[in-house]
Image 1 (cartoon, rainbow, N blue to C red):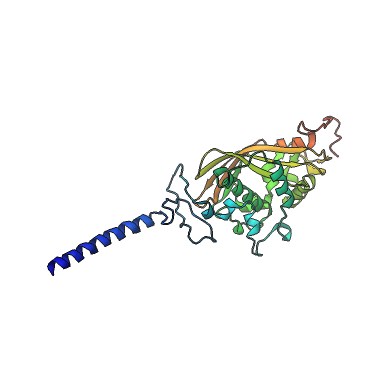
Image 2: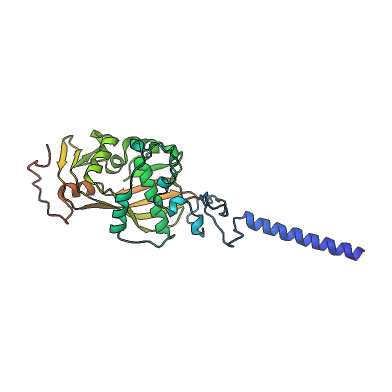
Length: 304
């Protein structure tokens, strides 16, 4: 009898030890169905088998990402997630959801690189494209999903930190272009600015991520923005007079660098952008070398 009790006790102790080890393994963020450590959150409401998000360690410099593609947040897998997941309560500029059909077709036709599905470039490009839609068209910052609304700020070319509310009030073009020879944010509001560029760039203004230099939590990347100037451009210049530039039909584009600080769900906490802000307007007025636009800068023929 004593031998039997001792055997049972030993088995019970072994079971308890194994259970504790298994529970510790699962609690540490390991997935029982893949055997991988998933430091990033899923953010995916459609897949209940995805692991629970684990915040980054304080001051983490780089984090290895082993998250399964199907467990990534929708805004990393779908460039139009913020449109497709609209439940009818989103406060869109103009009172309705924007139509990205034309600009998506231009993007697919004219992008310079196709990233492998699920690659860091693919994920960050989708994130940036969703953020771009939100910054242009979502009027209630609390409804943004690509950022952490209460924490987010953006810096453009070493300028001041801008909150979502300030960005929404100024408008995306005013924030990015600021003041230059051919454009001034000081004389035009966000609604008029959006209308001016929508008229000039009728097929939209596409965005692609060319390269990602570093992984989360601080993601450094190179981007390209481009469109076709198929309509006239009318906007105020730095000197307060108004510019009227006829369409030249050519491509207008600019390149820049961005550093994103993201959380475990890849939501953006902060964004720092650097680029030459004059490039876009110079190409709209003077052409970019792909069109034969001759302008007499001293005649004032572009300004009245």
